[in-house]
Amino acid sequence: MNEQIQLPFEYAIIDSQSPLFTLHNGLISTGDIIGVFLCIEGNITATIDSQNYTLNKGDMFFYTPSFFVHVIHKSDDFRGIAIRVDYDFILPAINSALSIQEQLLFRENPYLSLSEKQYNDILALMISMETKLETVNKISFEKLHKTLTQELIISMGRTLLFETLDIFLSNYPITEKSCQSRNDTIVQNFLISIYQNFRKERDVAFYASQQCMTPSYFTSVIKSKTGKPALQWIIDIVITESKQLLQYSNLSIKEIAIHFDFPTQSFFGKYFKQYVGVSPKEYRKKYGLQQNIKLLYDDVPDIFKQRKP
Image 1: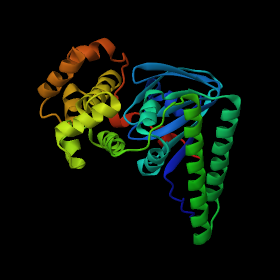
Image 2: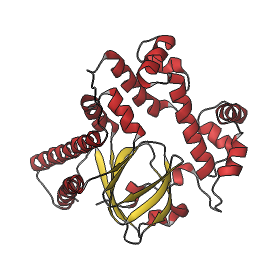
Image 3: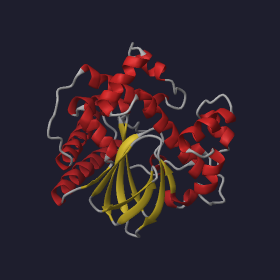
């Protein structure tokens, strides 16, 4: 049996007939992944992080961990390509290529409409990578040949990444670029760590200690570079996922409290109400999907478990 090569990214083609759209009323999870989606035919409209997006042919969307995607509409001819990437692969490249200001801009603008040339360039790279993936996973190679092929595909993935970043910056230019500073590195490390730990760690002291800093100085650095203090970053991410779990899952409020490692349901309720203004129960009653299905957090379909090349 031909063993598949190990790569720091996965590739999936999705169309209107995908079982994703029949399971759980079109609810999809991005899980703990980072990646990009390119619409290549038709169109799709979805709610992501409480925002509605419509993607047509030539539109890209960059997704980050812990989002639920609720598909509202898709055309019969809808077709797209999704690529998810390992943190260890993408983050060094992003940190070397983008300033912290550009990284924050990237986070704030996940939607990108490509020009015809940009679309053709990106699609050609994706198709080339898919063709190579299909070939290497179907044919037996000598170990040396397989290693070389693996490195070639990784190189193609890196080229695709930098081409995408270049297109993004051409659409969202920053007039003044500064050199990477020590404080930029502190912010970058914090943003990486917060996505890895926010379900368990909500104390600024934890993130400050990771970088051998006092909480007060750490907070001042984060605020000076991003415009909001470290605690607000933590709160925003915890509340965002809390809202999505209340809206899109039927995990009990007690189970959601456990998910975030709160000591009790009451603690979670007080935390949520402090920052949202209503209790978790009231929020669910007002915004929860009216669907009679048994939906657990881990049951939400993952596009990369559904279809691979």
